[in-house]
Length: 531
Image (cartoon, rainbow, N blue to C red; front, side):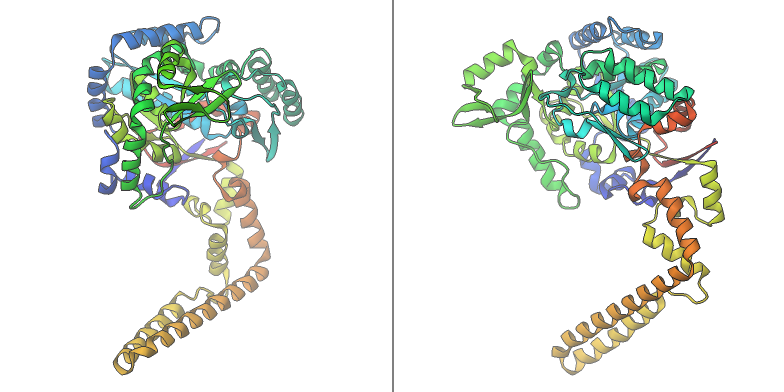
């Protein structure tokens, strides 16, 4: 097993806002609190100690203790649960949807980044305890996003007409999914292990939340990962004061809208806040809360509440108020002694819209850490890349660009017209100067002619490149095949493949290799060559 690292910016798959964040660009400084460095964590520990109270800690422990009551998890998990009662214990958290059989590969990278960061911090701050937490998105209602995964580019899907928070979905119908997956997996030892994990998780648990907890615990319990289902009345009661502000003051809307306008000067907005960023959650329903004509209405239902009635519901049934993408991060930071949230680029981009909101409600904004991203390649694939003279960084080029570069190297005469285009541009600069001194009205005609000439040169270059590709057909096929193997659909495999593909080949060793290879504070893209 070998590992290589590439700067995120050299892969072409990461947004400008994330690249600027990693570089600590001054344009983004106002949108985060402490940076993910040892010094940043030292500062964050002090802030969280001052803000997190013992009452909330005890309630968190009691809820988690109850959730793990009948689970035969690893001793390290139960040790971490007990540590949560201590005032010097902090969490590092990642969150994710309840994707079928963990969904895309990057779910594993999120979890391992979280576990490994806790181990790094434990060495740096031996007087404190650091506990990795996976926040299950049990209240999410977008079933279409989570009801499938890809196995060798075949879609394995769970069909169900259930509605509401997906964590509450019963697992009926997953026996059919198990049958389909079993056929795909075959009969090897690793295949049987995968089947057992799926079967024990989904077919022996009543709802999706508990099935997911079992599977994730089976994969990561030995590292002490604590799995939280925050769809809980006791925990929701801790959020009640903030829900009141959300209902009557539109706190998040005002704060996030202001921040978004500032970010929009340079970056794309990830999420747009609503006037009320809450859902109403009951069995079978999770719908937006809307305030109209002095009444609170639950979208797509007949449920309507006066201001007095909504307060009564909040006091008696706080579990019915479900945070959306804007308010969920606040819920997390209110109930956990949390220092850091680990997520993907898209997630962290919307977290950057929230700092002003956190300031407004006086809750410490967590450190934001970009999760590890990984590309797995086999030794055989690495040898092919070497024979084709394709570097790991070149592997991530747009396929047309990659083929152009490699075909050009082997071509008898260069078909890269960069010099000719520069020459043409210089000639037209002189023509524009002459036109401006003679008759400025001719500049438009000169510009049009320049555009026409450059377009003609580009078209000629493309035609010659196509001809050269036909001439070097074998090379083109080999490059196209290897890149498509490694980057399915010309995108990162971590968004396409499921862990089962690699577990089938390498077994539990696959997770062990990831665990050993990934350092979340390195903040670089990792390529792992599996032997």
